[in-house]
Image (cartoon, rainbow, N blue to C red; front, side, top):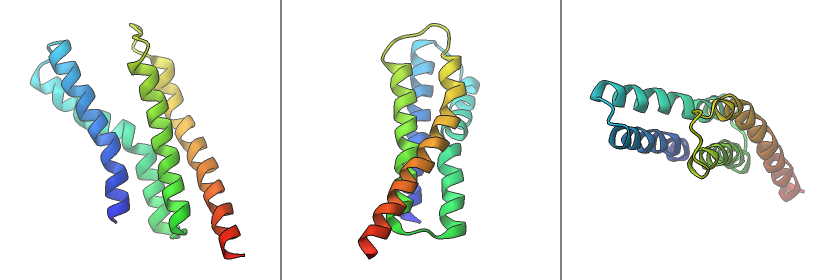
Length: 123
């Protein structure tokens, strides 16, 4: 359970940071701040939540669990860096559309690699 909470903290903290940035830099109101925090946490945390469901439903090995969460976090870091590094005034709709497919593909690849590693360790 601590593993899941630790990994779920990453998208929540990102949503809080982006909401605070939006609140300060764009002088948003408190209502917008709450919408940005909760909406951002749900949007950014969705791949982590899906993997948490898989984690608790199928109970894979620890290596596979960490690999899946790492894949979701890697996709989040990649999409976030695309938003943070080159300032794009368009609102980055392509990154928003690409995040979930990238995250789920990354989860599958990383969890698959983790499963292979776990299987090789058992052999």
